[in-house]
Length: 400
Length: 83
Ligand SMILES: Cc1ncc(COP(=O)(O)O)c(C=O)c1O
Image 1 (cartoon, chains in turn yellow, green):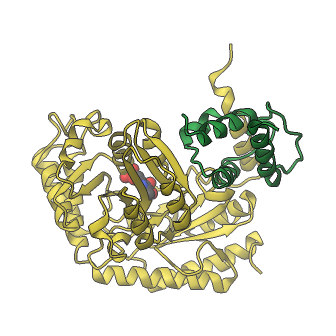
Image 2 (tube, each protein chain N blue to C red):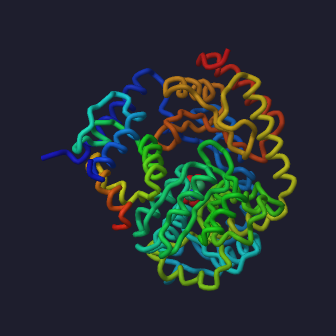
Image 3 (cartoon, helix red, strand yellow):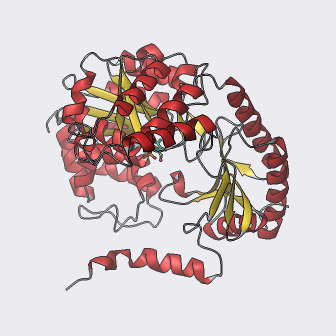
């Protein structure tokens, strides 16, 4: 009989070959202690965290921590139930209220993760005679949501307004249409031309969903995301988001003004057939979201950090995925897996943690060191990061 | 040449720029196995086919198409407005 695991043999062999070269496993890092949003102890070494999604540094905010502790005391450690049965507490409602205020929408629905929010929306809103039109670089949760449902799926070239227009133009007249976009694409840190894309989608009568996982907190006057900054709020039907990045905890959501939106609570399987978030989590999320409304200073400092790192790395001779800093994600392009891992390890040994990304997560087979900044990184930390990138790049032989 | 022969010839022309190893094409040539295309190549190629014939090949259909012959059949069907 075949061993069901034998299909993974090539992957196992590839990983072993990499580890045999003596490098540390980039996918097996353990943070022994976490000192702040920007610092942790990894294998006894104090390390600057440059590979988290803690963009706004809310994880150690005293008000956030306090709210979590209070909810833990008053409501216990978990709900042990689905949102539609025994798993909706006052805290889940308060969290949805905070989202409605943050986004200025009529409806908000909190899921247990952002992954599940995308699974839920994609798999239920479009049926077998409908079409979902998505960017080729869409997040795995969007693709997986499409795979879970029965809609017809059409891809367009990443960020190509023309390609989107062409494909929408070829759709049959019957059937509903949902165009799925992201504000910030997380692998390369580039942003979508939402103004143009939303206009094209509207022209063809499609509904529009924008995933603002990496845009929330940072873009737009109210921190709503790239779609706010692009001025297309009135034309976007659904915004999907997560608490696992700027909000600083875990959870996912969809907000909308559609009058029938709440029916999704009954039909989204990833909402119904899983336990709701613990009371402490929704309490920390609600507190954090309310604080993010007024985080102009943090937004400004995060931009400053992102631009400085981008410029500094370019000056050192690194190749960056975007010409300028477009978001808080700065993706350094490296020629192959070996160089990427060598640079990654040299950085870690000097006390800087970044994310390594490789195919299939990356577009076009790229090997990336993905840096993501935090509003709490100090100017001195950014100086140190650049100094360490200079050393690491020379050790690995990727810069002159 | 029949319409189908013409479609086959045209598909062959569109495969050529992506046929790095110069694999000889037949009805049974597979995209993943024989041509060794990755998902990115598939996307570029599908876009080229869609533009040439002014059709839309959904990801659902793509999942069913493994050989050049199957693709030619699908293109013929779509051009005739069928399923
Ligand atoms: C674009 C995008 N959407 C959705 C998610 C899923 O978020 P979560 O971590 O809440 O499952 C992520 C994060 O991985 C993401 O990057």
